Amino acid sequence: MKSIYQLTALIGNKSDGINDEKFMTAAWILYAWMRREVIDCIPLPELPATVSKSAKTGRSVASIYQPEEHFFTLRSSVFENGIRDTVEAEIMPYRQSLLLAVRETAFLREPGAKAKPASGPLAFVRQLIDEVGLNDGRQLSTGLQRITTQQVGELADFLCAPDRWLPVVVVSQAKNPALGQNGYLVDVRELASDLAGSAHVMVIDWDVTYEFSRIVGDEWSCFGGAVRIYWPELFDFETDDPYVHPLYTAQTIRRNFYPSEFEKELKKIIRARNAGQVIAWNRFGIRFYVEAEQMRMLSVSGEESTEELLKQCREQLRRVHESQEEYKALAETYYADMVACQEDSQALQKQMTAMTEMLNRQRREIARLNGRAEQPPVDLGYEQMAKWVEQYYPDRLYLHPRAVRALKSAVYQNPSMVYRCLILLAEDYYDYRMGRINRDTFLQCCAKVDPGLSECGFGGASDILEQGDEYYITYGGKRRLLERHLKKGVNHNALYCLRIYFFWDEKSSHVVIGSLPGHLRSSLT
Image 1 (cartoon, rainbow, N blue to C red):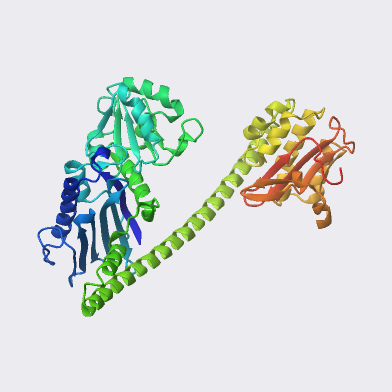
Image 2: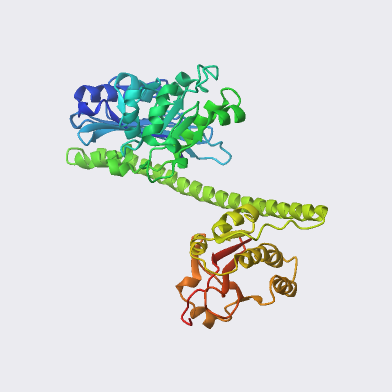
């Protein structure tokens, strides 16, 4: 089972409260939609009612209508082409307002059935937006919402609002009106209409983007014809990562997408994210039909005959069993997705290894054609060392943040020797770990760098136990021992003693350096 569409929104304006008229209209819209869906096979009362019926065609519908409690819930299910498609919707009181909850799911009942992709909202959602009004911290609309300079502050607050459940798509205008449609690289009216009930679409004219950037900052802003999605999650403009929220610049849109293809990609991303998000329905008190029917049966048990109760229990048991099968299938789907992700990860790891090997071959070929190996500069200071590693050996060396911090207080009197040791690790030790040279050849390379330089580990397990916590770092989510080190000198005076602590990571084929160039303290020192 997989989610196709989900929505939670307040009905009407926040100031409406629990409004009888709004409830009656919204319940009638939902019920009328359900009735139209089965009008050719299941006769239903014309007005909203509590019903439960099914047909041999694979369709079933059920609803509970309790106007005195401002409660209405429905469930409409159809089985076609090996897939059971189920739509559930509910209206209920929530924090002095009326809450709408909608969930559509697809359950593959037969092998080989084609999964249904995430889609936009059902017809009744658009009707509710237009005729009753839905609120997500801001009124939902089937049309675009143009932001003025005076409204930019409200937009910034809305983006960070904790009660926003839908993404916000901001479409900015380019300075050049010849680009796209008057400076807009997407058809904003069509986009807003298609995403109604799935996202808020906001349009910002070119002159307004300056004020938007001033308030939220350039990294969080959207300007120059760009389009940005702000996901519905609590964030802070000062401390959080802006790049979690996708930004498509005008250059990216024009270079990577054919006309109208970008809008399709945008809608696909938003709908998939909508369907995949986990909504804690119970937190809102949402029961949907199956649980609501259980509670209704308990409340009327004293008024119903035993025979009628047994009949209802059997029907309820059938629905519970059906839901159990659906949730079991959902768990199996999640497990299959997890296995697929693991396989994708392994494939990407192999691809990365192959690309690294190709880069190594190209590097060796360039060195052969030049007649000599191009050596990186070694006459730099400690302040340039981290960038030096990123520039020359990003595919072989990794300076752990703790090592980068250690460089800021380094006092070893020969930085050039440290650079030569890093080259030794990136080239000769790397070749040794990749099986291209043997241990003796590597030790000879150490002696060429300096006769007093050696590489070793800590010895046996008892030696490792004697090392302090300083000999461990967190890498890849795990606590790793800096089990190897290059060393020169036996004097513990930091001016003359060189130590580079590291380990070899088999998974990424990197030399991970945890500390340099000073000696780490241990229980022995």
